[in-house]
Image (cartoon, rainbow, N blue to C red; front, side):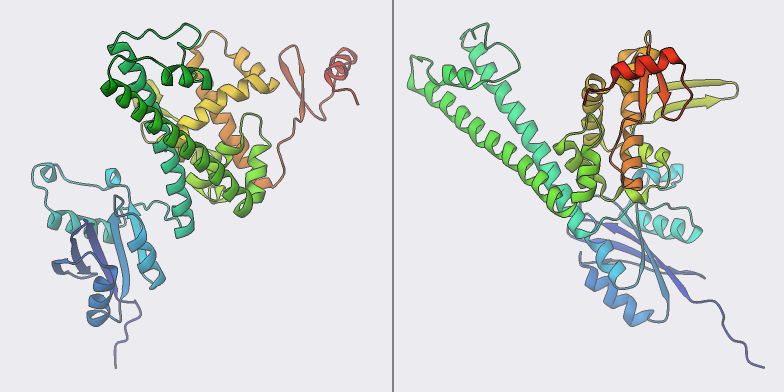
Amino acid sequence: MTTQLTASLKLYIGLDIHKKSWSVHIRSDISDHKTMTIPPKSEVLYDYVQSNFSDHEIYLTYESGCCGFEPARYLLNMGWHVTVVNPADVPTMHKQTHQKTDAIDCRNLSKQLQAGQLRGIYIPDQRQDYLKSLLRHRADLSSQLRSIKNGIKSLLLYHDMKIPDKYDNPNWSKEFIEWIAKLDWSESTIKMCMASKLRQLQFVHSEYLQMANELRAYCRKHHKTDYYLLKSIPGIGGYLAAAVLAEIGDLRRFNRSADFASYVGIIPSMRNSGSSEKIIGVTPRCRALLRTYIIESAWVALRLDPHMQAYYRKHTGKNPKSIIVKIAHKLLNRMLAVIKSGVPYQHNYALNNGKEIKSGAKQTTKQRGVVKSTSPSR
């Protein structure tokens, strides 16, 4: 009687990726095979595994970092099971804080992968990754623009050049820039210094505007439906809609609004022990750039949307910043709802003394009068 193997052979690979080399640990479902260092090329690893373990089912993991998702995409296309993990989520022993090497790290990744202790992050396709790079480049330009403006004002302050009161504010008008350009300096050196800063300002500002226009235009062309669905929500303009699509991609991959809020980082950070529970602001785990944009848009939504105004008043007395975070959370719920339903946002309520009356609800004669009076005339 012959014994037949019914379970497929499996291979678990832990990868510690660096710019100049990769550390690799390979283990089978029975024992460790080898720890080695290879050139930083996916093809080298693939060829080695194919020549030695062609009959195995391959599982690979590595930590996300500066080398991005190109290795993951390449190996996924080759039929491997690839998991990219957040470095902060990899289980480690205390001694690894004192003894840390690339060999130890990749061996630990391999063991944790086999034990099923790793939870992977989303791997975007190449097109999505390129769009995200455009968004973050525009954010970098915003930081550079702010730095150049601060440098110009610092130079004026250092040399005791008083800015007129009508220009001394965060808004930089064309008149203010012209005033700076026409300043009468006593020496040519400082004049050249200021002229150089103004040229920097002009170039970075033009790139700042151009990248925002390109980002919106791309999303209007390639993500037209989702772009206009997001724009239908009060407080969300063209740039934020494009930023959401660039940073996240397809929102339909989130099954619950709580998962979406957790991914963006608009959830509380809490400590619970026994009968005590303490809320410590919002979680530090977030998509920092996107969360910043959404918090800013919450202030716009508060100004434009009567429902958000009623919600804000209901929480009067609390920290205004905390209320804005709650409004930002509601914005996320609306984003996911319009994308998954495919229906633009609509005001399906009426306000009666700060209270929401849902459509279809039974109303009194007095309430109907109030609702009628708040409807726009045709």
